Length: 237
Image 1 (cartoon, rainbow, N blue to C red):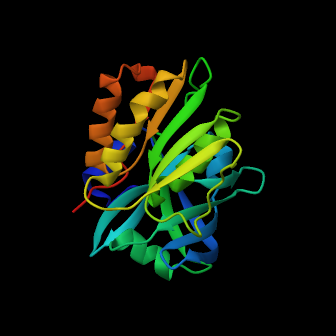
Image 2: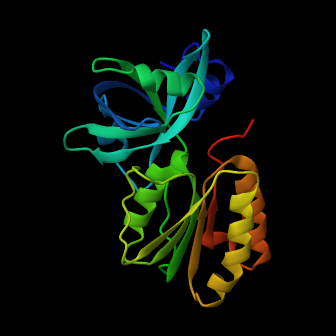
């Protein structure tokens, strides 16, 4: 199934990645810039199992060339073989596909490289940095690490987005998407918050440059590598 996917598909074949065909069953515009699709999994979840923050590689057509992007599964249900995907819409072939997707449309998915390890000891506080692109993973993470309290720096407008947060345990700090505002606010607040946290866990998933800078900063603050997860979800132009 990975035939014709260029060097990325060839590498994934060598790594024994599993390929599946998923079918859209429903589409919902959560906001004008955030769209949820529900899909059947083509046998994927029964074959691979499910874990927190699980993601798949989806393959899109980009002017005749294969283009892959990773998306976190939302509400995966192996019993029914269904899941949802949520797209923060912008320019690009993945968003174009999501905007036009309708029941009956299919998308090829590859499972390889995804995983999740519960931090040990369990976090006394979780610190999260993300944006609409990583919101599905944020929701999955907070559910997996319950009942730990969490502070979430969220770049962008959270109004109307499907946050699965508990106001009694989770604080969401909305940060406008401008220049290096997110980087500045996290750097200013994190040292003081870490000072009172015996077992922190820091999870960063925003644009690649900010993720890289914050990951380095967290190491400077002395947070052990095994207590940190950092993954760039997209590249700024």
